[in-house]
Length: 92
Image (cartoon, rainbow, N blue to C red; front, side, top):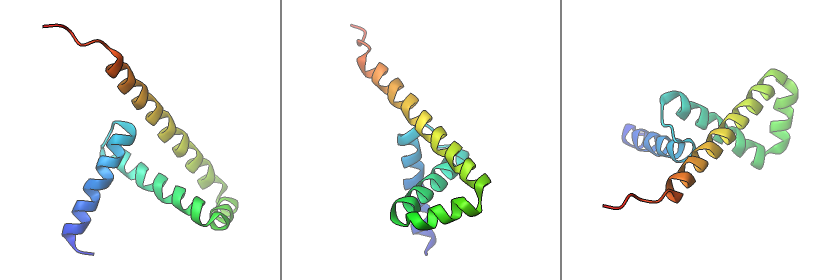
């Protein structure tokens, strides 16, 4: 993988994290990477995800917390955007 592509793709993931949660910090981007990869594995190879969950119950709990965190942050971000859109603009 060339460095230009890696940088461009990292920018894509940062923007995705920002649009999903309202935050593009390095910590959030890393969480979104794990969330997205696990989500993809769970959807495309559920038996693998299930096997891993059985072998790593602590990891399963961590993934569950991560999914809840991403969901909560997304819901709060959406609600804040909806409130902003619904607020009347001040007249000049």
